[in-house]
Length: 132
Image (cartoon, rainbow, N blue to C red; front, side):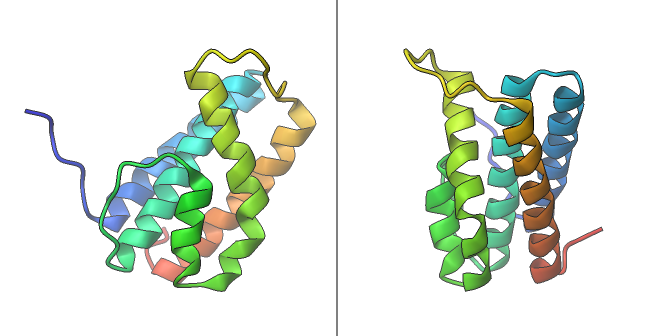
């Protein structure tokens, strides 16, 4: 029997925080593919935590743009993070599946996405009152 996932927003934010720390560690070790993957994982968990705080029914989904669309039903401010969500979703796919053409993640692009990720995380913590 497979264990059930938590429905508590704070649990999702805590796990997202772990993934974001992994992102930063892998980035500092020049492992951009690994960092991109964990960035996607962190954002996914933060978005799901936000949605759960609004009464959303947990779904198994990894597409950050689809999650963002659900978040936008509650708060249009998050639209500013669409580009981050699209790019980070692609990093997830590239790390998990063999593809014929890769995006060639580079340090500069990923650094910009990390900054946006920090802004998104800060906003989610503010809007859910579940921050540190």
